[in-house]
Picture 1 (tube, rainbow, N blue to C red):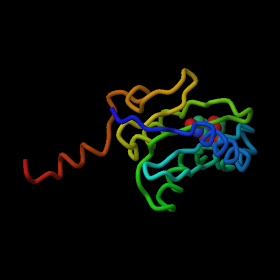
Picture 2: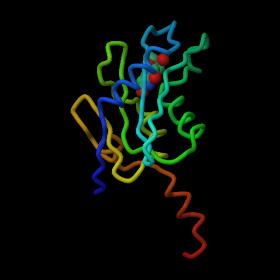
Picture 3: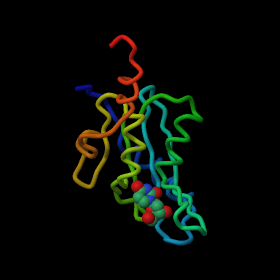
Picture 4: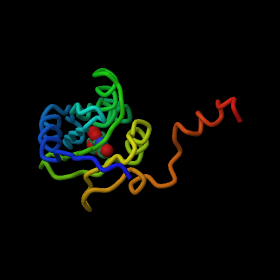
Length: 138
Ligand code: THU
């Protein structure tokens, strides 16, 4: 298990700042997400809704875009908040988005305290399946 020091307060502040930039005129449920990358950057994202409701982008969508736009890499720790700044669990689709870019031992702040990616998305379908399929050494 990878033990990594995480400044959770810095992540919480970044998530709240992101939440304050949300575009959520329909649900009126602004969300902010922040993450620490393996190489020490803090990235964030907010939800962006659409008049065509189903096109709404969750905060985590913006976050994984920011991950790539700021140099790529992997996510070591994650924090998501609602309008009150309370910890919010990522929805199922967003757990899958985060799983794709997880660093070994990735930690998530949850409503039940710090958990691992495997705890919030057990038995996941992930990028390994494609790596295994394309592995010609087998
Ligand atoms: N939302 C997120 O941004 N992330 C989640 O993990 C859960 C839901 C947003 C989508 C929508 O704009 C609002 O919360 C209400 O569902």
